[in-house]
Amino acid sequence: MPTTKKESFYFGFMMCSGMVIVMTFYNLFLQELFGVIPVTGIIINLLLGFIVAFSLDLFIVGPVARKIAFSLPIKQDKPIYKILTMTVLMVLGMVLCMSLYGLITAAVMDSLGETSLWESYASIALKNLIMALPLQLIIMGPIVRYVFTKYVKKNPTVNMTGTVN
Image (cartoon, rainbow, N blue to C red; front, side, top):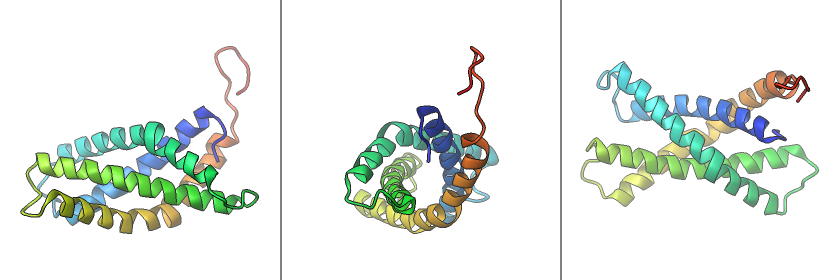
């Protein structure tokens, strides 16, 4: 979908925003933290989660997922195959990384309980994957692609020198 670095930035920003909001509230629900954490704590959690997720998307998971996706023997002539491959790879990478972020956050807040770190990480990652993959494939991906093509991709912008981007 995005063809330039600027477009990739906007697309990633939109996708991370939506996914972080939904996944943060999903994890708060799973941990039964509604009413326990104040609204300011939730906002801070959302902001920190977004910063971590967007950084991972731009610098680690996104580039690795693209490299893997374009090295796989998929039919390049059908956009749906590229979209699905990229989506699955991005979700897997982000779930693995953001679950580690969640594990670290839980450890800092001393809310892991008696399970081992490995068991806690596996549990967090599995629960996040169960939510994130359908969310991305069915809801967030189509919405962000629609908004991106309608408002970002089709609207050329005029830069400071007066030329159209």
